[in-house]
Image 1 (cartoon, one colour):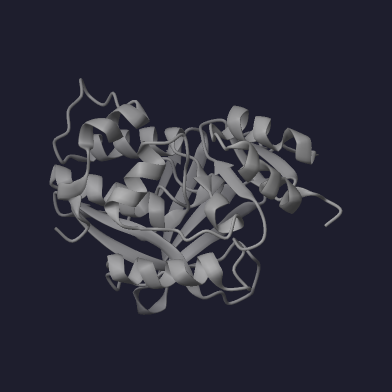
Image 2: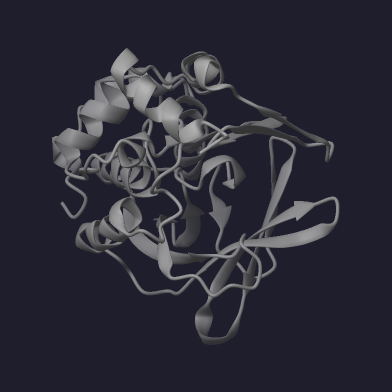
Length: 276
């Protein structure tokens, strides 16, 4: 199997995300796909804490499962979508990776560093992404030009540009904004490894040298970047507050469901210190 689906402890994964589905149905249907993604993103937070602690991020199935399933921890896009791809593959879905350019940073032309998935169900293709943090979709998005979907009060859409470039968009009070753009080229676990190396170690990576934890959801979305905790709401309102270093552990646990040891929290707190 391309994504090593045979190595997944499926029962442990389903318990981790509290999967309910349609009476526990796991057949490879769009209903199952929706239910799995919704449960995954609600249960496994987006976070970069291994990178912030200058540790390697491992993408082999056993390592990803040990961290995201076995511990109360999360991960960033390569970990999240590698795990989800393996689960889907195990269940009989047709899964392919894609590489995207982040467009949330204004007009800057960013490198292809985001790893996400395209899943085919009954001849139709769906954008599936459990690893874009608090701005990402909660459920699959149909890969059709002009398609729009509402998910938990958030609206997403697809636009197709020249050369078959697909753009995932989000509707805000001020109008549509682009989240990321990706080409139709299929990527594989080895490609995720290359992108992971850049994101986890390059000095220009947004994940190096700072704490990032995020959690999407219906109604509200939460993002911690360094010492700033931001909450976005579907009514267009938002709030932001500073998290003192001494409160980092509580915020990680209470808001994101992430448990860290005392020594790790001391190192992370130094990165969140606003005086740094």
